[in-house]
Structures are given as structure tokens and as C-alpha cells.
Image 1: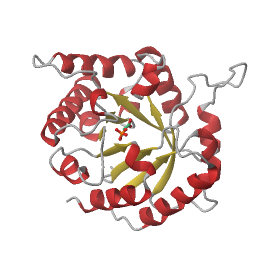
Image 2 (image 1 turned 45 degrees about the vertical axis):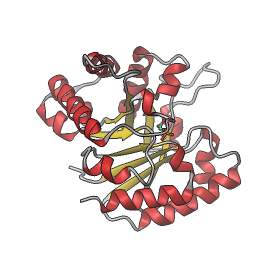
Image 3 (image 1 turned 30 degrees about the vertical axis):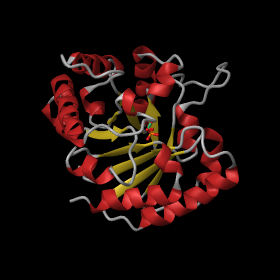
Amino acid sequence: MNHHKLVVGNWKMNPGSVAEAKKLVSRIKKASAKLSNTEVVICPPLPFIVPCTRRRKPVGMFMGAQTVSWETESGPHTGEVSVMMLRDLGVEYIIVGHSEQRKRGDTDETVSRRLKAILESGLTPILCIGEALRDESGAYLESLKNQIKASCANVSHKDAKRIVIAYEPIWAIGAAEAMKAEDVYETSLFVKKVFSDLFGADAGLKVKVLYGGSVTFRNAHDIMAIGKVDGLLVGRESVNAPGFIELIKVVDDVK
Ligand code: PGA
């Protein structure tokens, strides 16, 4: 079992040029090599994956993509990129079901198809889930459960252990503040429980749960230590080199 903590940098549609992307990746690569029990995944925009890839595989840093087609055979799918194409480039992780993709039309059904394609290829999916609103009565827990169930509809017990779940409350993405670390703890436990109900206790124990939504180097420690998550999915701070480098060091130092 891999006990490493995981920090995923979702660059979204940033930075604006290849030159900037290359500068950013070389700084992150150097810092990642010094970590002792944290792995870093960077997910640049598609055209930057090749320029950001090193001939010699970096230590502690992996390449990820922000989405992928559910189509697995080459063919007439304009604008789409397959899992095999990404794998060929050295991509090892793929984010799936990010709320910004769901907003643009992705549904639990299409997410489940993408997830299946990723698992079949042997790559690691980072499945994003999260409620739009938090209500007093706890209805959001039911909606999280349904999201996990529907997104994982095609997943076998064996494959379930390879999924990384990124819990990202939508209201905390791109916000001024992250979710409270105590609430992160409660919800990540709930996610693990749902996972073990669906796929067995072993899967519930093994599944990595990350938190995402307004994570910075300042709040990373408490979210890890009090929230007791296995890692973080980072948006804005992941394209700010000094902040992200500090963040991965902070995460690595969390006992
Ligand atoms: P943020 O984005 O860190 O900028 O809030 C997180 C995400 O969308 O993955």
C-alpha cells in the first residue's frame, strides 16, 4: 500500500504561454525531488503536457491531465483526446468530473464513462465530487453519496481501490476561504464510509481522499492535520510557484 501523501496541481487554463509553463514546471520539479513522503502531480493544459515533460522521469513529480474522452477507439471524435494518447505522452493521472467540467455539460453518466476508460487503461483517475450547497439538515451528504454511486456505476471492487477521490465543495472552489478543517475531516470520513459500503471495507481503507477548494500554503497544514485527508487538489495556488512550493513542503512536514 502506498502511504504517500498526494498534492495535485490543477493548472486549469493557465498559464498563458509555453515559456511560463516550462518555468513553472522546472521550479516545481526541483522542489518535488526534495520531498520525502509526498508525491506531486501537475495537470497542465493539454498543449503544455509535452513541453512540461522531461526526458528523464522526475523524482516525486508526475504528469496529469484535466479531463479525457470516454471514447477509447481512435475515430471521428473531433476535439477529443483519448486515454491511450495521454498515456503515450507519459500522463499517469487524470482528473475526471471536475465541477467546472460538470458545469459545461459533464454529468454523472459521462463522468462514469470517462472513469471506466481511465481505469481500463491502467492510469489513475482523480474523481472530483462535491456539493453545491451545504444545508443544515445534511441533505448534501445524500447528494455526495449519490454522486459517488452514479459516477462509479461501472467500477469493479478491484478497480475501486485505484481511484483517488477529490472532495471539492463547489462553494469553496475559487472562493476567499477554504472549508473549515473540522468539516473536511467529517466529510472525508463520510466519503470513505460510502466507498466501503459500495466496494468493501478494504476499498474504504485504501481509497485516497483529497480535499480541494481554496487551498493555499497558509491553510494546507490544518486541512491535512485536522482534516486528516490523504492530500490536496490545488487550483490557483498551483500556478503560483513560490506559494505552491511552500505548500508541498508544508504537506510533506505534516506528521
Ligand atoms: P482553487 O481551485 O484552489 O482555485 O479553489 C480548486 C479546484 O478547482 O480544483
